[in-house]
Every structure is written in structure tokens, then in C-alpha cells.
Length: 297
Ligand code: ATP
Ligand code: MG
Image (cartoon, rainbow, N blue to C red; front, side, top):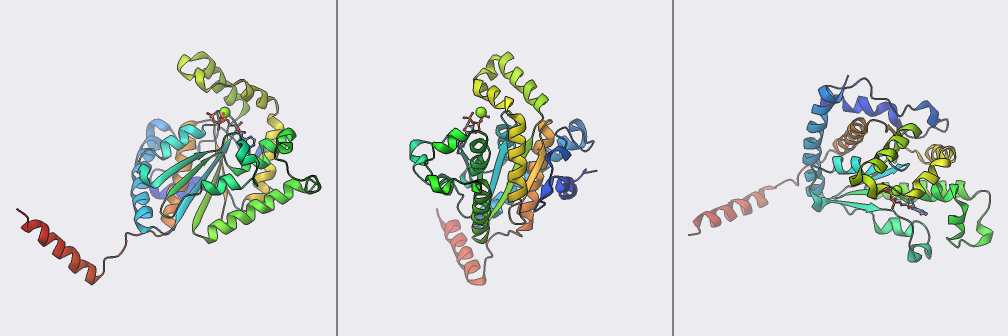
């Protein structure tokens, strides 16, 4: 399947979650690629997809009403950077910004956890990309309790319900954003533990990739099942109609790109974007401006 751009909505369907409480991460195969082949149809589709995306982004920008927020979460070496680079390769940088969530600064830690996320939200007409996001607050912070301590949340508020409360706050925040015209799509790049190992080894073996390697990534790898548990729980509680999650197969980078690009295209198409309409009065003004220019010596 999926030989044409119009087939892409079908391609992404199996990975979309918009409210299932029974979601199980183990049902999703990181190596899935729907029997597509990069050398044949997928390579072509990727190219066409980037062109389509570029058109749609121009319209989003000119229309200047909606904003698109794309959230990327993954284990280390899950391919966030490369998928972001690819999807954005045809997009005008003026209408797009990437915001990377690193460890919070002292200033971040002095605020509520959505504070820094709010500062990075895209304005109307723009595509905003969160490379990691406030979801780290229910992932890495859940797996490493010392990070929660560093947030200085008052003790009486730290109860057994804390994670459920955070999920609810996140759902409410996302609902608020979507009611303001910020369309949200969330991607979990689902890479397998074996593929992560392969990519880490590559980072160690290839000098030009050494800079990407960090010892702490290997330590996190030891907590793999805790992370998967945290991801599963987070997705169960925060996959909604207005802000769906996509559990994207992560072991084949080209397939990851194809799925993400398809979701972005499908989402922008659904907004029925158009260039601002030129009314009769404006048409007259444009004609007279043209005459003026042509008269110039
Ligand atoms: P790369 O692919 O280049 O490794 P990265 O997104 O992993 O990109 P790093 O600088 O390596 O970037 O790591 C950022 C680290 O910050 C991650 O380990 C992430 O879990 C952590 N982090 C992000 N947000 C928070 C948070 N709110 N609290 C604690 N740690 C956080
Ligand atoms: Mg890292």
C-alpha cells in the first residue's frame, strides 16, 4: 500500500492513539515498516511529502490563524534530531521554531513545570517543535525521584496521586491550547533496546559521531523497563482527540520520517488552509500598484 500521497492517512492510522486506556506499548513493533521499501515507493513518497509540506506551511503562515505544535519524545538515540531535520527540510525557517528541553535551569526550577513550555509555544501561523517537552515531567522525573525533589514542590502536595494529577494538568493544558487554535500532535519514536545499542555503538565507533555519546545515556538504558512503563502510562492518560499520540516505529529511520511527515501533512490538510482572499477593493489596489510600478523609468 501507500504508493501515493493520498494513501498516507491510511499509513499512519495504526499508530494513532486518541483515548485508549488499554494501550499496551508491547503491542507496537519498533521494526514495523508495513512492507514498504525505501528504494522503491517510500523514497519517492518522502520526497513528494516534503514538497507538499512546504506548500502547506506557506499557507499556514499566510493564513495566520492556526499554529501547529509537534512534540517529540523518545529514548536516547531514538532519532528525534534526524526526524526533525528531515520533516523541516523543506520548510521556511521564518515560520518554524524548534525548542529543545534540556535539564531545567535554576530559573526553570523556581517555577511551575509548564512555565518554560509556555515560553516556547508557537505563535499563530507557525510550526513549533518541542524536542522533548513537558512530558519529561512524567517520564525522566518519574524514573528518577531525585529530580522531583529538586523541583521544590511543597511537601503536602507530593502525594500518591502526583502523577495522575500531572496527567490531568497536561490534558487540561493541551485542551486550553487547542481551544486557542494551537493544534497538537505528539510523537513517541518507539525504538527497540537492541537498535538503541546498535546506534550507541555507532556513536562510539565513528569519530564524527563521538560527540553525540554520553555516559548517562547508558545508565538510563539500565532503567529501560521503568521508562517503557512510564511512557505507557503517560500515553494512556494523555492521548486525546485534540492532542493524539502517535507511537511511531523507530528502528528504521526512513519509516519514522515517513510516518511523521504523513501526520504533519494530514493535520495541515485537515485545517483547510487558504491564502487570504483578495476582495474587489484590494484587487483594484493591486492593479493600480502594478500600473504604478510599470510606469517607473
Ligand atoms: P541528544 O539526542 O542530542 O542526546 P537529548 O534530547 O537527549 O538530545 P541531551 O542534552 O542529551 O538532549 O539531554 C537532555 C536531558 O535533559 C535528557 O536526559 C532529558 O531527560 C533531560 N530533561 C529534560 N527535561 C527535564 C526535566 N524537566 N527534568 C529533568 N531532566 C530533564
Ligand atoms: Mg541525550
